[in-house]
Length: 454
Image 1 (cartoon, rainbow, N blue to C red):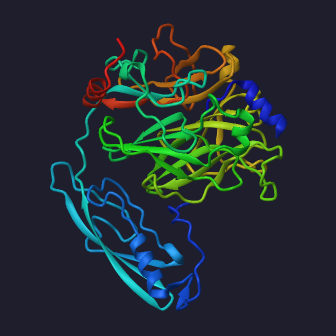
Image 2 (image 1 turned 45 degrees about the horizontal axis):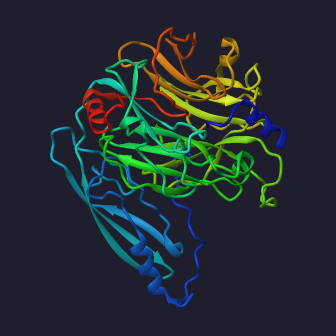
Image 3 (image 1 turned 60 degrees about the vertical axis):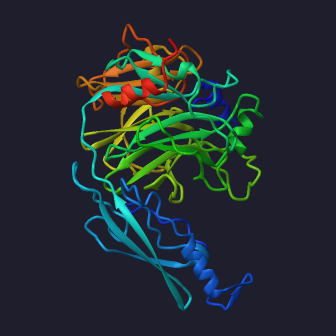
């Protein structure tokens, strides 16, 4: 997460699921003829009416089918075509070129000794044609020193070159926040495993003109901001979704990785967690990495601690290579041998948890001292991606107290040998963002829709 500098993290120090979880259920009320002035049948009907199957006529991936609902109602599901949509929401899309598939889901909603049913007609889109990746897309924010800098800007590569970029939309922001703190930082974009849907998530935070960093770490937003698109050009309305509980002082730098084993996305971020008997968040705590799971970026499981070293950990990003998930995060020197530096770890389980007393650690240390070895200032906001044209990885890292983003590259992640290219031309003022490999059609589309500044 982009903060001011290494001094920020040191300041904090001093102050200091195998299955997709169902929505958090309201405690079930014993059967009654009247609760809060509503009859049992009335509450049952309310629970049925509150059910939603999102994008029912444009299904492109697994869907959320809760087993608990409003007023503590119990919900079970049946499908007319389990080979297309199962009763637990797993989706199998028709092959490319086939006609869309249809299915009807029936929800049986029970409350006390009463029950009712509700039907949802679904249209499942065929899979898209797989096309080669021939360009790169780069959403980022510009920083709190600009009045308009805490919104989402777009950049695109010049052709298939990950080191040559143009600012899009005339250098002005494309997505702006109208909810929460009205600021957007740390935008992250992910392509769905099927390939034809994109989710963009961002930190709900505005430092420019705001009450400052200490207030933000103790009383910051517990929400993340979400957009979705099928073409990178037309974006949905902003969604302001809470993912953290009351003990969290902030929800920063959210990113996501799809986990095929779970059939869901694992979303992770950094939070300060305060004890339940410290509602004003006055204590001294360390920043931890948290995670939750989701299928649709609307309904999230309860947050869980993902990485807690006993010191500060922020700005995690994950890529998969072979059997391993590789995670780069900024660490306060507990795991690695260099203080306040980046560490590279790996695990075969994306949701493996490490706590201060975890021995041995579930995430294996692969590399550390990345910043120190190059003699650089504080690095944060890493984004990692694979080259479209060669067997090579790139990691753009933000030297927030210096030159901004710097590209690093290595041929291997399991035994990295990092270097910094001699010549590159990045966007004009990028801070903590994401580089996403895209097809030529997608590249041409975003460049046409949001023309470069020059």
